[in-house]
Image (cartoon, rainbow, N blue to C red; front, side, top):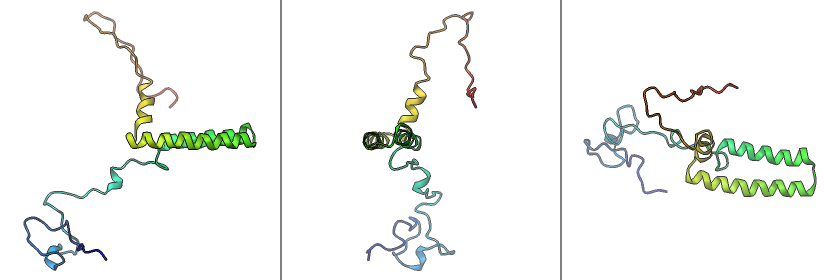
Length: 139
């Protein structure tokens, strides 16, 4: 059993109470917040959603390529070995990337649409840059 009491970390600073006593709980039976005016946020609300440690879009591409290798190219020993190598090498790399930054591949794809050089518009009479729609044309 653990030597921690169920109320440890929940006793309010303005209400001295011993750990485990009935005075350390709120009247409705729930433990009070650590400080007045603060709220506890569950970790799953701020943690990135990862599938098998990698970004969901990347995992779907990995699986699609592996299935395409096996079932489209042919069900041969060479394609099975190539698909398993693809899954292990690419997935382990993408898990490492997701540990560095969970949105790295999304950021990379977004950066592909940026220009390498943005020319300056010096004068008031200069022609404005072409405006690109924020909504893709295929949507």
